[in-house]
Length: 235
Image 1 (tube, rainbow, N blue to C red):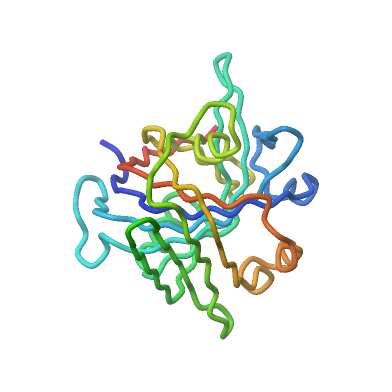
Image 2: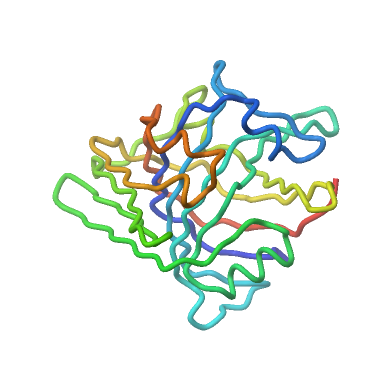
């Protein structure tokens, strides 16, 4: 049985070029940085968990909620092939029970903050916004996209960003936890405008303060789908 089943919906993604050496202290053992056409990316991602079930059981008041995370991309070689995955710097959710479960069982880096989201549809456009409070600052990531979805094509930047199906966590003991995230390939909405008002230093620490004054290389909006998070293992 999967550890968690849910839907991830309306994934707003802002991608930033980062110096690889910045991420090496966060790199789990046995993994390597996954580079796309010479660029090492960190991504700010906001989305909704919908219809969430833990071990097949819906938990009251914890089925639908926001998440915003900062992540980077890695790969792990096993049985003659590369597994492409993500490492989370920090994952923000609005309920402390979610933080407790994820940090205790998967040794992730969840934090609990007051959060909000807004989805708006017009005839031709979709507006999506995710926000959270940190150190007295209301952080907000908002974008406007065309309403018609388009396929995500092979060998594109959006395909590289969204087609990572493993999670890797660096534990306090120095070991690496691996878990699989399953979902079909998503569709995307062409983004026309965006606003990012985020205190990266306050939210993610000094190592990521450079993002406060950096324009993202790209901004994306994926529709998402049903997903599963499978049980963990140590590698």
